[in-house]
Length: 203
Image (cartoon, rainbow, N blue to C red; front, side, top):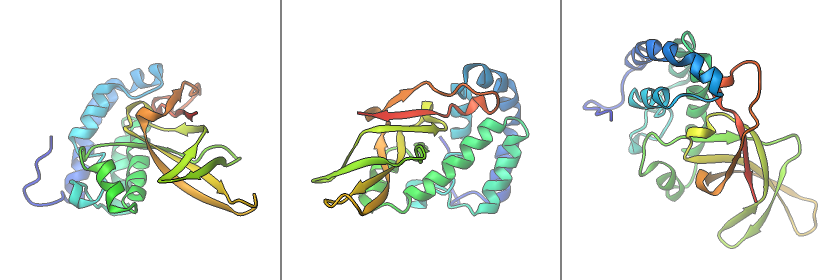
């Protein structure tokens, strides 16, 4: 666990942490390709270095880094393993989006674990329909290309709510506990195999 005594680390400190991770990433890069997901050791190393805190709200232990910092970190990580760099970069974007949620939702997502990860998917070319109910939405469908889903605590999914007339569509990005989703093993590709970009499914 990282202990920061002077606030968030600087860009130079974060990039240096990413460079220091290169030997670990190189050691396990072939394992990620073979198993089509990042090894647990890599995820643990990335988390220990604070790579999953980028763009998270500072009040939850996050690092509100700018885009340049994330790009430099991604470049340093990608020198050793492009798939690991992809997960950190996408994860920072998902965290930024989650930082726009209500305070209650932010507390649910980040409150108990500042290193919690969201694996998002915008779904297929056709929006997944959702139905409004008291307290939220009910969704059923599939959302492919959810990078890092094997190690995520949360699923970020896109849905569309149709009104009573069946015409007006309201788009939503939803955050769902991964424990309430099914993960279909669909990531059988030639490159970037270590991203584990499988498919979220919900019934």
